[in-house]
Each structure stands twice: as C-alpha cells, then as structure tokens.
Length: 300
Image 1 (spheres, rainbow, N blue to C red):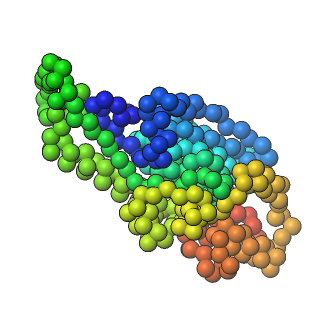
Image 2 (cartoon, rainbow, N blue to C red):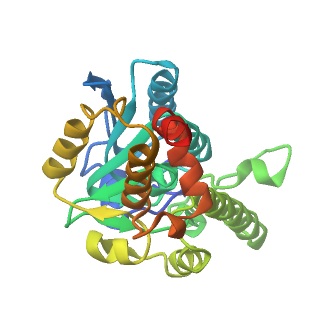
Image 3 (cartoon, rainbow, N blue to C red):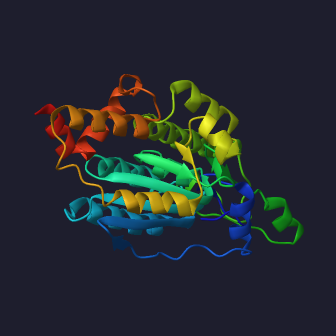
C-alpha cells in the first residue's frame, strides 16, 4: 500500500518525488494498456506506479508473446518511477525467459527507476531518451508512529491480536524497536532479490551493481549509460523507428562466412563492444538463441 497516516508500505523507492505525488493523490496511478502487434513486433507498456495486479497483467502479455510464434521480438515502452515489491521478482523472471526466444528491447522515456528498472533489467537491450531518469536501485519501507497524536486527541487504540506482528503498522499503535527490526529485515530481503535479478540480467558489472545499491541514486540517461544501467541513449521516436525498420530484415540469403560476419556484427551491436570476443558469454548465448536461424547458418 502507499504510505499514508500510520500505514506501513514496503515499496521500491523509485523517483521519490513522483511516488509521493501518486501517494498524495496529486498524480494518477496507471491504467493497463493492451498490446499492439505490427511487423512481427509486439509492443507492451510498463507505465506509472507498479502495483501487483498491474504487474500480473504485464506478465500475462509477455507470456502470450513468448507462446506466439508469429512474434519475433517485443518492444517494451516504459515510463515508471517504481512501485511495490510484490510482483517484481516474478516479472523480472518472465522478462528474462522472454529474451531466450525473442529480442526484447526496452525504450524508456520519463522514468525507469527502482521497481521498473528491477523488472526490466534482464531485457536484451535498454534504450532511454536523454532526459529520462534511470536507477534509484534499492528498497524503502515507511512506518509512521502516530500513537502520541492519537493519545493527544483522546483516542486510545487497543489491538487485540494473536501475535504482536499482527498489529504492526496499525494507526494509533506505537512502533516498537522489534517492529523496526522486522521491517528492516524485510527491506534487506527485498534488496537481495533486486540485486540477484540485476546480476542475472548480466548488464552491469559486479562493481557497478555494488555502487548502484550503495548510492541509491538516479541519473539522467547519458550518465546512466556510463554507469552500466542502459545500453543506448536515443530519442524515443528514433529508437522505435529503428526497431520497426529492422523487423523487415531477413537473413535467409546469408551462409558461411557472410552469416558469421553478420552474427558478429549483431553481437557487437547488442553487447556494445568492438569485438565479439569482448562480449560476456551469457550475452552471446542469449543473442545466439534469439538469432538461432542465423546462428545455424553461420555454423553450417
């Protein structure tokens, strides 16, 4: 739930200002948008505050794309400051599975922070527009102890529960050190899950991941690229146009050395390296699966 009064919220702290606007009602939460399919590319949207039900809806779209042989690649248009912990690990896993068989490109404009970055970090490629804010890796939980305010108003809250934890976060109930310890433990568990998914996404180095979580900072796209968060900075319009134009490219005519050369070019482009030998092994394996027909032609 969104922080408010004495309610406890365990959420990814995306762009804090944007999340606080949503929490206070100054900004609207997202409404699920259906997918669009064009030129063998399926477009999926990830927008606004990421709530569990919304992420379930997104997973359903991604799973459908995985099972659809007519779909060759998936474009995810993202603009989200973050959201709830619940549903992030599951969605990140579905995104990773999707990349095994489909080219999955994220194009972000606005925000790609915290929970949003968590769930999309395993995509084949992440592109962000210049002014997009990226990062804010970490987790936050908020507890408000308003017991004294209730007391001053002449209200006494008496929780009758089977265990102390059952009344944790209730309005008017004092927050104990045990409560703080328990919630901090949950935050750390969620942080470890976030770190694990970033590692599996194989985009950032171990040092880059460590720095991202130690600082919790968000960055504009150019700096985010330098720090390993994203692969490319481009205008949304240019990135999307390039993706759709590449959908018409076929490789049936390539064999032998020509197929090998094309495969090497794709690996260099997708991995952002000058030579295929410099690309991480996990990245090469993922690209080979996505371009399995071309790879087979290169091996022939």
